[in-house]
Length: 245
Image (tube, rainbow, N blue to C red):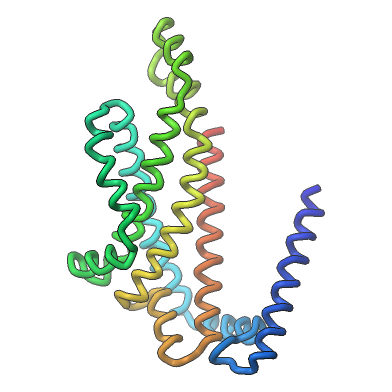
């Protein structure tokens, strides 16, 4: 069954690559639209330079750091909000505002406060925080009250209550938060780099490609960013599944 799924997915990807290449041939202008062949050549050329991997590593490290900060702060504050209604009421407007403010506003504020070196971490953390806060709080709030009453009656220890009641209740919410937050963190973090222009970063590579009208290079950088986000998401999702298992 899995083999059939992989074959079907591969065929769909190949069809889209053919459509992309045909569209590039029809446009016949590499600046407006580079095809997959030119993009692959650009990726090979960029991959021959050590600075390419250094930029990817630095950007991924900063985004991952911001993601972890957002995850930790969102987790801690969601637990406090679950335990103390005053905390939940106090944080509610703050979280709503964070979710509504455009990413560019956060980028500009982060640049003013901390400069271009830290803008990626700050923006990734700000984006990740409300996702984890809302998802984890929702998972805690839907915990079966009958199970909690049973645990209270039998004086279940906190560790067992966490393992057998709370973790099963929040597991699906945490998994969805991880999947959503890592993608959003990468998009926001790289956007922050394009605006802030820190050296040795994916955002800087994208900006230079735009300045030089090198569309194939821009698409190669984009592919590298998407692939990096995909790998990190799968790795973190695997670790989360192992922890809950």
